[in-house]
Length: 228
Image 1 (tube, rainbow, N blue to C red):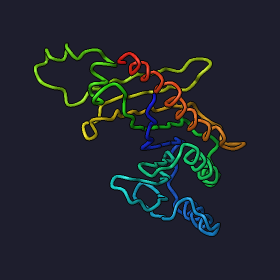
Image 2 (cartoon, helix red, strand yellow; image 1 turned 45 degrees about the vertical axis):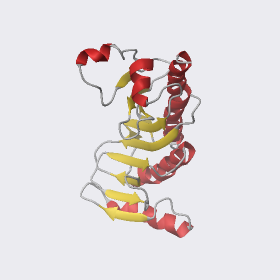
Image 3 (cartoon, one colour; image 1 turned 90 degrees about the vertical axis):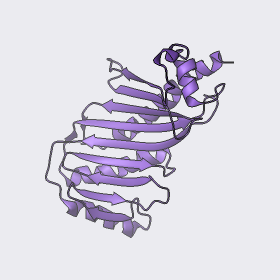
Image 4 (spheres, helix red, strand yellow; image 1 turned 120 degrees about the vertical axis):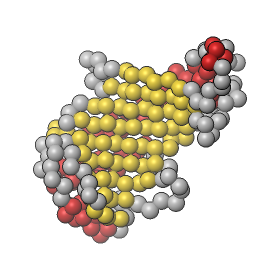
């Protein structure tokens, strides 16, 4: 796609068998990071769901946190400007000591979500791109008798022998930003053994990001080309 995408959010969940949340290992990790002089997360809090590491944010709606809940580790970076490489590294470097502290032998699943905004070329708005370019239903929508406030599609790509991951993709117009398309790609990955390190956890973040940039965006670009 000719216009560079703007990544607005990364999310990662590492699911594991339920355990009783213990904030002490999370606090020890936080203390260790602070002693290093360059902490990944600056704040430590305990909620009714579990311990949370976080960073202060300036933008409304922004988040930067890692939560350690009863049955999962949850990482969120929203509107913080973090790159895919930085997020992937952060997930791995934080998960490895926490998996050891919780005595986990495996994660039962991993889910990674990437969200982007992009301005399609050749169309005046995101809703025009979806309705006329992507779906080709601009005239048919007139039968409904009132204008659509938003349009979108959802696609699911199931696992196969050479690619055991699954991907769900949503592409929608964005009423709050009419020129933009909102794109979400969620990768779902099979169980992962903890022993030997969590390189695969990091690699799966990259795989989801690359599925979005190397497959979904070129798919959308084909519809831009047809409009020229």
